[in-house]
Image (cartoon, rainbow over the protein chains, first blue to last red):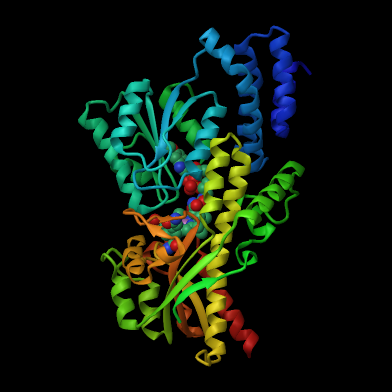
Length: 212
Length: 242
Ligand code: B1M
């Protein structure tokens, strides 16, 4: 097994110390940052994502793998910046205005990062203006919004409406999700996509980014 | 019966089985070693931080009718509107596992340990739900001790946001209950802080009053269907009591 395959296998086991050790070895062996990232860490995480989609592993195992991946990324980050390696895409995420619940949003963020997508996480209780302004400033073509209650779902529409008002619909796309949200609701408010769980959110975002 | 209720930490500590099942791990599945270790670690952190608290306040049926109506956003037909007029006693309640746990969950996520953050989150969610059950049991015992609980009666909790009682109903409930005393506040979107909190009404009523057919408009879209278990638990009691 080569070192990149071994990184993938260690990710699968959630062995964060081993992933860090192997990533360091790969860097020292002069392997390209792009290869370590794509074929080692992201490749490994893609396998983990597929296993989860096929119900072959449980969510906590995905999160242990994500923690291990982060250890590898931390080592690669300075080199990625140095070499100007771009992310697969960029997404701004947060919970709807008035909503403080963020576990779902956090899980979506972790899975997106695992797929090599840059995530700008605005946290909780994010206003429509903040979502849109951040996406414009950061050049992010996708905004992801999460909600827990029917009372906060309504503020998702505010983001879609604001994009329309500013003539940005079509340029900046929206994906929504959360316990009370449905595909019908997404269609009703004019959101571009609905993610029923974190793994599905990755597929939807990739489709919005055109990298599916 | 009104005022703050003190619970031991154990009242808010859920079973390992409940937590694993909330994480999508079925009862008959082998738990991977790393996941088992993670859950153990999360249980230890949770046990150190959990600070359960509850509050309750008796209300009359007439006053509850106003609270229940809330902002007028309930479903046209709901089970609770048929249940509460036949209650022997109605008591508003709120419980929380405390802010410290909720802060720790956020911290774990922002410090790059989502696995532990998620494990803690599922424990705290199950803990808060369990605490609502503990509140109902405590209430039932208090009523029994005071001689108010006739045989055949049962106390069950009902919450805004479930079974057609719109979540905005929490506004009126909070005006009367005032759970700020135990550190629970409500924001404009009807979200409680700390996040791991539960509000509702404890309905003390004859067992058959709690039973209803699951044929409401909203039942079809309900992913929870926890009411089935509740109704069954009431029926089991009847059988046990015969
Ligand atoms: C950007 O793109 C995307 C794409 C996908 C996205 C996305 C964004 N965001 C999320 N996703 C998706 O991917 C994620 C990962 O798979 C998923 O994210 P979720 O956030 O949905 O999933 C989490 C990872 C795990 N899921 C959860 O943690 C929520 C599960 C359920 C059972 C639930 C729980 C556990 C709890 N609750 Co409550 N709770 C329910 C939930 C019913 C359900 N079956 O979903 C829900 C959300 N709760 C509800 C209610 C009413 C309430 N809860 C309350 C309390 C609680 C507990 C404390 C017991 C506990 C913790 C809540 C928490 N989140 O911290 C109260 C509110 C709490 C508060 N702070 O104000 C209270 C108001 C009840 C009360 N009166 O006390 C209901 C909301 C109904 C409504 N109409 O608004 C509810 C749907 C239950 C129901 N009635 O069926 C997907 O939705």
